[in-house]
Image (cartoon, rainbow, N blue to C red):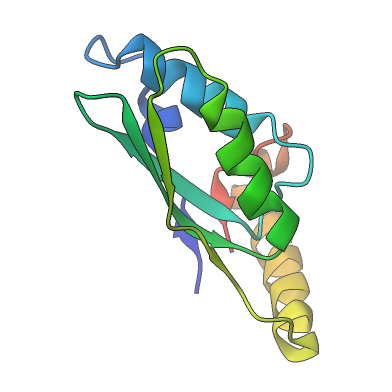
Length: 121
């Protein structure tokens, strides 16, 4: 039902992360419409091809992710495999209840601090 966000962004302190990965991670984390209900990952190959994956609730976010990644220096090609989740009032209600349950639970409240929350629903 929910996933812990384990993207390349989570491992930026690792010595093996390339400058392109750091920049792509930064750009994706700075997208203004991204929220706890969106989950995006990426991979970078040796030729500068970035493949975007994940699921988002807003179709604009899918296109914006590809746009910002294309502008990163060293990126030659972007393959956008991000899926847009269908609009569903039931799913939206469930997401809201899960959000309140997870981030309202005492031991997990520390994860609610900051802009990019690590637990994705």
